[in-house]
Figure 1 (cartoon, rainbow, N blue to C red):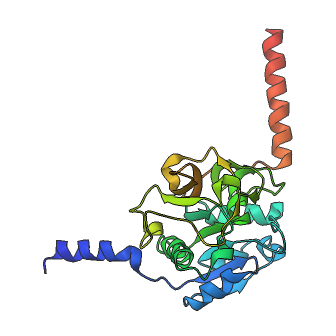
Figure 2 (spheres, rainbow, N blue to C red; figure 1 turned 90 degrees about the vertical axis):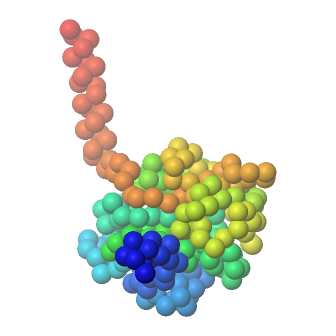
Figure 3 (tube, helix red, strand yellow; figure 1 turned 120 degrees about the horizontal axis):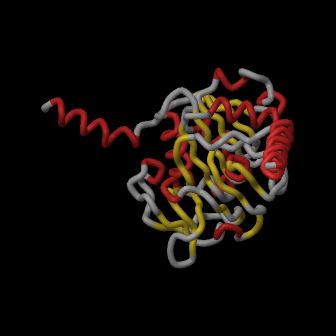
Length: 252
């Protein structure tokens, strides 16, 4: 077989490969057990650990899912800042709905495994955010959680059917590795809660919820690179600077 043909074959098989990784999981539900069953080394982590500089350096992937009851919790400002710095420039996947509740369903299992494999195949670090992890990853949200700022966008409050989460999930980029082995559309089992996402770059949307076609972002994938979230002190300085600029123009 010619070298060019071998390279092409490897490129086609690459998205289907299984990448065993060392994964930090924030949120104790079905997710960590499922990932461990795939052969990954999985560690449940706390906010205080994530807030410790350098803590994530020994991991290949940070997976943020619902932590606790109801809609879960977000990260503290220190933890969010550390996650942002660690994942900047790396691959991420956001699953905008309660996909962890659907683990056990073949399509959800495939989607979850694909998301993890694609992120791990991209380098030494990366991020997968499910449900609360998806909302927290954006630059703003209505849930009252400190935004990590991995990608530009805003999330409305979590709730039943929000973001079309109880509707059919339609492929927008069917050839994307995160969608490998999945049908062009399906209604995810036990996936009924999510958030309405706005301002997300359409080029990053792999699949979307909708009654008759893709409408609400459901699966987002790309490279982390949104602007970091300013600290309160930075915002104060920015406001003072703008006020001084306005005053100077008025004097002129």
